[in-house]
Length: 387
Image (cartoon, rainbow, N blue to C red; front, top):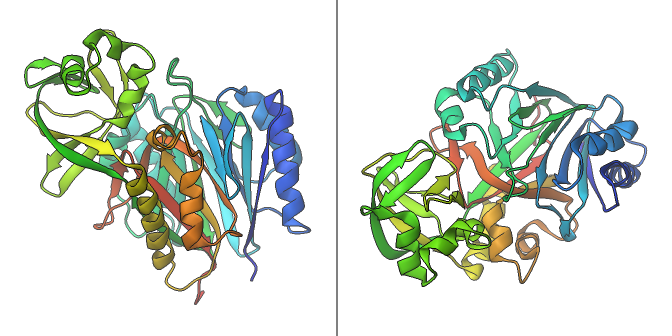
């Protein structure tokens, strides 16, 4: 087997030292093998440039992408205020990192640039991270044709109070951006996704919305509707912790293909909900409630789906992109989703990941689909029958 993976994690007072220690740990576990690519998950509490300086000081020109997240995930659990570095090594894989600084200004333009990357003769897969507070991920999905390539990614998260988040690609960092890693060669990728949120019977009509903001449900301000449902005064929903915990109570929008989950990022001062994607007036919606046991079962289901998509190939690494609502729901058992997945993936498989404000994976028709509230498991393996 030529494909191997390693993961390092570290905490420190500053981002450079945390990035340096995590990378050093990952390189040690890689042994004498040279890294082919790197993936970084970093606490938004660190300065982006410091983290990149620490990581790249040891990785040199290794293609690298990453994003900020409230907490990193590894096969050892959940890590606050830390940097997680995953490295993959194989002489039979080609990887290149790319940076698109205009994602927030034009998601359609970013989609066109991604299509150019995939317009090669040989099959190329793509992993990407984009800004979760700025930009239109749904527009990105609608504007890109997946064709024969596999695309998957997540929306970076961070400080919900300030909307602070960032992305990184090699030595570049910033917000409002999209960072992508093109992959080709002897590599098999499996993707699985699931969630543990279900409707509880409360149905609404979205009677007024504008772009990313839902103003009223059944003709009443959204905060008043939630106040009636949960017993907290409407004005309290505009302030922490409720303004952010609203993420735990998403809406299931009726579509011809079933319920589409759409989650609030925060509650505004006027009682409107700032969503992760635009929602049209007149849509019918159900209130969704998450359940711990259902989520842990969903984590295992996503892991099984991902393994099945490998078609018999043995996984060497798993990338986990969980919605930030999972961190909130499992606060009393941090990292429980990792333990649940390990019952399927095994305890020794290297795992790296973080919490996101949205997940993007191919749907059953090959188009790119924007998800909320899901956990996505992406496994990497060598092809069983390489050409």
